[in-house]
Image (cartoon, each protein chain N blue to C red):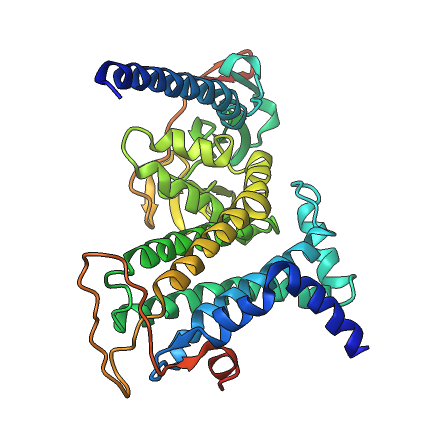
Length: 254
Length: 142
């Protein structure tokens, strides 16, 4: 069996050089020796995002985005479907966790000064990810179509009306009408399961590319020299000679 | 390459870019309109009629007026008031409390009199009044 799997791996490796990718990007990808637990929050967020996608798709199996059926379909998931309650609460609590960890991630980056040049773009894409996460939470909140979600959405969208001149039109654009109703549900559903997850996935890709490209920042405290060597004239990959490999050392760290 | 040739190519490229921008706009405008304008209920040109005998003394009737929630109140003394039912605080729909003869906004507990004036809570101003007329026992709002 192992031999057969080895053959398959070899077949792919000969064609794509996968072994090289693994050695270079994982084991050969060195992190500063004084890297700390706060550096793992990004990975935590990635895991939560994947879980949200999976539980979200499971909820989509039974959820009906119609004002007469939405609440009943959610009740059906909660009471009739085996483990439906778990899946739905996983999705709902997961969204809160996502924002909580996002804020922790943001604060750790802020306090360790990792956002400083040359990593401004990392911060900027991360900030847009925070906005998108808030947007996907808001649009998801309406979907159960209960009293809480209806009034919360009424209040949240009404806030846009305080913008001078275009405020009223903007509220109507958001709601798809003058009041929260069937068109609001359709719009929010489309944003929640279509546009926003796609945008978040793309932006996560950009965010990860940037981190791979510049190398991981050095924490401002810990064991070694922590001065920032970057002078700003040209691009330099921040190497960490003598650092610990991402895989397996950091990946499997407690 | 001489300068006139480069200039000519730049002009051509500008033309292509303008054409692409126009094509982009031509495609996105219908998409935007599709998103922007939902089908609205065109009920009797912005006027609503309510027979007076449908509302008891001290009761209120809610209806939709120009796509927004509105309410007609028949007070204990028999006088009428037509008001927007949208709370001026954050846009929630107010409820009529028959036993207290006032309006309550469910979102942040704003209270209004039967005439729409603020009694207490966060609302910054009174409920908007809607003009109405009474003829042959039918109230016409708008």
